[in-house]
Image 1 (tube, chains in turn purple, blue):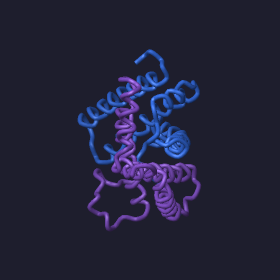
Image 2 (cartoon, rainbow over the protein chains, first blue to last red):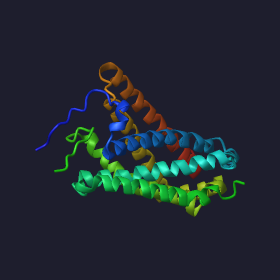
Image 3 (tube, rainbow over the protein chains, first blue to last red):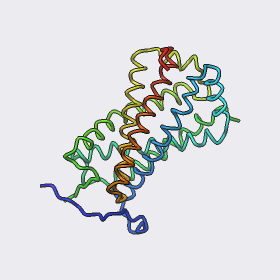
Image 4 (cartoon, rainbow over the protein chains, first blue to last red):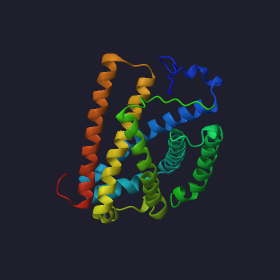
Length: 130
Length: 123
């Protein structure tokens, strides 16, 4: 039988020292979600230079990619996307009743795997910027 | 026994759509990142390459569906985050319609961009 849980009206981030793994997973999923939707709007804005003309599009993309800070931000974006994908997969499985007793372990595994993939991607993202 | 709770109304259509789009996006976002950063490199992208990809009907359709599902998933997630913060009544309704308008603009602009890349004269 389903139950409802009263978590109060407002999420209290001031209690962060008391947070469990599940609460951190929830906060990281929310944070990475905000970053991804913000990036989606930015991404479409940049790609929209294609409506101006082929030269403007190519110059804009290659101009941005020549900046070191953009390459660093891309590694950050990959880390954010990978965590959201892995943790999201974890949440979908939990919704299906899979892995209910190993939620903490799967969250830590998502974090570690995200870190490994982000670090491994650094050479690819920084190639040619110097 | 493990407990389960979610911020979403589990009986609602939006709850289901959030999960269906999630399952789709897991695959397509990973594909998109892999294709444009590891197979091709973003720094080498030119209009001609984007045009070549977007002129394939399958790729164009996938990207438009990607845009629509990502917009829905992201904006619905933002709406739920705002509900979690305790916003109710008229301010919540105002934000809901603002998010719907922003989503519509993003989808229209994204399709215009895809059309420009594909050479479809509707942009």
